[in-house]
Each structure stands twice: as structure tokens, then as C-alpha cells.
Length: 405
Image (tube, rainbow, N blue to C red; front, side):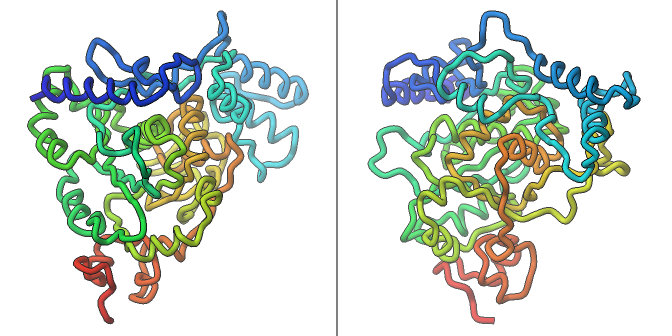
């Protein structure tokens, strides 16, 4: 079964290649996707692998900035044993005397990210290698999503951030808000993104057997799953997001204007979401960056999720939305997918995305009227996204209309 699916994957990728232009340009996303296929296993590698100068100097700009800021703040005592990030932040905050205006652009890797994004997209050689660009090879991906040569591309793609043990939730989603009959005025496609932890990935044979036994049937039947690994289990959600951003940026690019990322415990009210999206111009959709703000931005210094000062020196994370649900326009998703290769991973996936947006200097909107964590019947009925349990209680999924109170 594994060999058969691998053969199908290779054939599909070859067909994708033929559908794009044949020029072998150094741009990203590449016009010739065949260059990303690893001939050893037939899997596509989503790693950025940008062009570099002949002698790249990774960490150069961080070292230069540290030297500059410490020379200006020569009277500040810094702990030489602390991380470079903490030394820079301590020196900068003391020098500028603005502790409430943190410079999150110092979060590794220290670069002008908007300039880097332009250079990567145009194929210009970079002076520094990305610090977060390991091989990124999906085991499986949906062949029906963002197919080249489509006469009509989707208006929206909903990415459900799922898990290995979430088969029941995936099936429930397919039987409820994913029904095509509930989306009469909008072309929508759905993807379940799944990250496999490395502790379940002992070797190629075991992972192949495990995949075939556990997910092969579901994948073959529905063709709506993006599965990748192996990933660090402590940062599984972060890598799941990096994987989905990079895959969407490569295959869908900016042909699809808007993406909705959804926690697997949440559901969608189709008619309300259609109304919300139809109220936005295409230009607005392309640059939308919105979700729900978390209860606190404080960096935890105690408890199970405590974060060391050397890792995150600031008291607060950059502004971001939580993992409930969030919208990202195609233009921003493309830039973020590149920036992630130059942004050190962090186990708080929501905060990690906050660092990405901070590096790009893109603010995020708060949409409590559109995304509801909890509320009354009338608040739920007015929202586009809510907990699955709430919408199941109030929604008639056969029609897509809310039940009477």
C-alpha cells in the first residue's frame, strides 16, 4: 500500500510540474515544482532553501547589532553567560529606557524580514542562511486541493489543525459544516493538517506500516489530509502550522484569496461565514490577519509551561491571536511562510506566529463577533466560528439554519 501511494504521489507531482511553467527560475515559490521532489523517496520537500552568496555569514547581523548596542550602552552590566538574545534585549531596553516598547525584531534571526521576503521571492542571493529551514516533507497531501489548471479556484480554504487521534472529530466535521450543500454561494475546500511526532517515527519501515494501518484508509477515501513529520513533540503544533503555511503558499499561492485556520474542537456556521466573507473586498481578503486575542500576553515564568528568560527575555509576547481560529489573507500567508524559515521555533504556536507577524510588522485584528469561544444562544447564532458542541446544539446541519431557541 505504501509503495502504491508513493507511486501515485510521484505521478501527481509530475502532473503538477507540467501544469506550471517550465522555466527553472530561482524564485520562491518555484515555477518548476519538480525541483523540490526528492528522488530517493518521491516526496516533495517544502524547505525554502533560498539562494545564498558563496560564503554566507549566518548570525552576522545579530552579532553586528549586539556589538553596536553594547558599545552604545557600555556602562550596562550584561551577563556573558546569558543568551545573545537576552544580552541584546537587556542592553537595548536600558539604553532606550522603553521597556514597554519591546523590539521583537530581535527574536532570532535578526534580519530585515520584509527585505528578505522580497529577495527570496525574486531569487536574489542572501547573505545569511535561514536558521529554521530543515527538510519539510509531507507524507501525504490532498491532491484535490489547489489543482493546477482549475477553471475556478476556491474562494476560501479552511484548514483544520487536527491530530493523529482526532479521527472522530474529522469525521464529524465532514458530516456537518463540510457538506458541500451548505456552501451554495462560496467555493470552499477543506484540509486537515496533521503533524506526526518523532517518537512515533522510529524508522522508515515502521512509519510506513503505521501510516498504512492508521491513516491510509482515511486518506485514500477522503483525499483531504495534509500529513507530515517527524516533528519535535514539544513543538508539534508549531510545526503543523509551518507545514500548512508552506504547503498552501507553494500549491495555492495567491490564487486563493483567504484561508481560515480552525482548531479541531471548533466548527463553522456556513451561512454566517459566507455573509462575513462576501462583505469583504478581494483586496481586503488578501491582507486580512485576524482572530481572537488570548486572555494574556504574559510570558509564563512558572508552572508546566514556564519559559526561560534566555529563550524569551521580554515580559510579554508580541501581540497575536490564540489558536481557536484565525483568518490569513493570501498575501500575508505567502510572506509568513517565508519568514518562518528565519524565525526560531517556539512551543507556544500562537506566540510563535506573533513573532512572525512582528518581524513583518503586520498587526492583527480582534474579531469577537465573528469567532465566539462561548456565549448565549443569540451570540452563537450571530458568529461564524464557535465551539463544535455549541453549534451542534443550535444548528440543523441538514439545512444549515439555526434551530429556534
